[in-house]
Image (cartoon, rainbow, N blue to C red):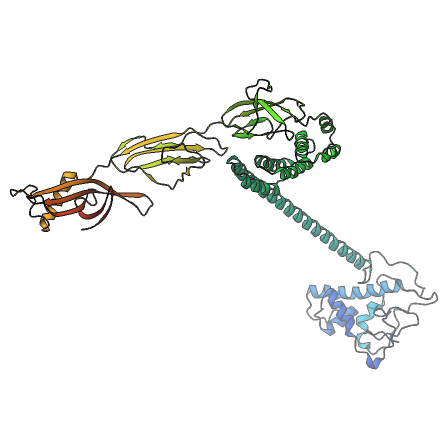
Length: 589
């Protein structure tokens, strides 16, 4: 069997070619007639150290050491050729030491000639058969490891190290990539969490503020709806308590909502089981709704020791306020409750109540700034007397500046518009009939245009801040007497002249020598109201004049009702008029 690359005959047990150093693959026999892969070895070398563009004759001369007849080679070509030859030699040496031989096997002498079909190439491969710097004196080769300085083949330890290094680098890069992805995911998660929390906070405040305003306006169903929406965006215990306490307050103000109060109180206890007032209110509701059997299980379920101790001494007949005592910046309504059928006696001046004190019937409404002290006790059906409730409420609503209204009260002859200054966060309500304004009155909008009407008028304004604190009421009284471009006397003369010119009167003389008389009677001023394109009101004024002519016998020969314009826009124009009692319609004459 021969080498596929150079045609060298193999010995039994041989694993590489002693001539070219190629490994023996598959141990398949190779016949000279079929051997056509001689150039494969050169191709491998070309891939490793690059192609050698040297004429074949020059290559033989280099291999034999005869450089006299060399063509012109560059230094780079010369080095590449030497590198190529060294690579072949090293390959043979390394393979020789890495294969097992029989102990009695002798390496062929370097002088031996090998007869192959490629004898012309012996000079090229001669050096490949002779290891560099080795002595060949006929002795058996020593079983020694190749020098560490020897070049490694592609299957050597250098390739293994490079592969191991590449493998390690690959996984380091993968690990770094994973860490970067995890870091980015963490950043995205953190940022998105902050955005969501910020958004939830805004939504909570938005719905809670709306509910607070509805509650302040006694619109309890709308307030409960807003508080319920706020609870969905509550991000902590404090916000949850605020939302559910808002719903509880509203249900307390509504009749027949005991079952809803019970649900809300259970929810509040689940949120904060250290608040004794929640338990006390729930116990009272159980008593008043026929659920007394649920009271003891409720007390037993309390995990907080302070709550349990407080509930052991709880006086169920003692009046319970609907709102916790404290300081408030708005008007509040406080309701008292006790056992069903009990009678509650109270005082609001700080004195101790007795059975001669006022009997509680309706909620207490604290609107003005100040301190309010409730003292109350209950007498049950069986005559037992409860402990005295003492609850103090402080109203500190602050102040709201009254709205600035212009012009001041007074008499005006020109058409005048009212101006109302509304600062941010302030809402203004007003009336036009002199009644006291409230939140149920007409709401003023900055786009509104209020024009003072003719005659007497009274406007009253009140402002509320966002906390519901009302300002003092501002009153404006106006008298508008328009000054016309045409006086009545002028209007009368214009009308008589118009009738005479149109043949309806014989002359402009009111009193004639024949005894006939033309009567001209003023029926007042007609004011027609219309709206301009900008939404403002427009007023047009007319003198309403009745004309009648009677002959000397007192018989009426002509009569008519007319309107004469008295504004600058219709000054002296004559119109027909119909109607009576100050309600006239104007038409073209």
